[in-house]
Image (tube, rainbow, N blue to C red):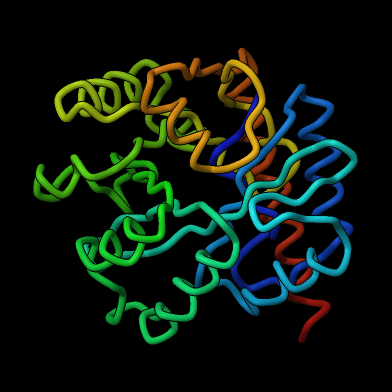
Length: 254
């Protein structure tokens, strides 16, 4: 299975969910050779409930993933924590939405939940918890207590960071952290715009029906990370287009 484990379907936190944008992103993912994504929209995005509420109406699902003509969309979200990091949480949709409801008092800066508390919500519910872009300057995790970091199921080798920090430079930071702590490293594009889709992804043997199965394969070190030779161009182009589209959306909503 070719899968991206860090994938957004909204242009930004401030924009509404759009099936047109969603379909554009998923069409591009399929064209890039992907067979699945984990949907990790920000937990404090505008009208978070509309994302899954709309997909419930538009696509068949089984509480683990939505099926878009054979393409799997596993359910997840990206959570801000008090330590400053971004955490990718994925698993059964009912458990995911239960956690999201419990996080309602923690959606604004200054009230974000602590990482240890988030683990306490996620672990009993069987969620996969990935440390997003651990060396990004604005939202890093590498400073967190090592015992907490060991609780992650994986760290995120992030498409945006590979561009901004440098491919070899970022690899030289994230992989040793994972090796030190015994935590696998997986790839996530962090795409919000179609040009960034496919800049990185993971290859896992076989097919998977649940996030629990994905987690087991990742923990067994069966995951191969793929970095596109055009990563820099893809991320740069996506950033430029995203800025233009955000300006247009802001003008239209005034």
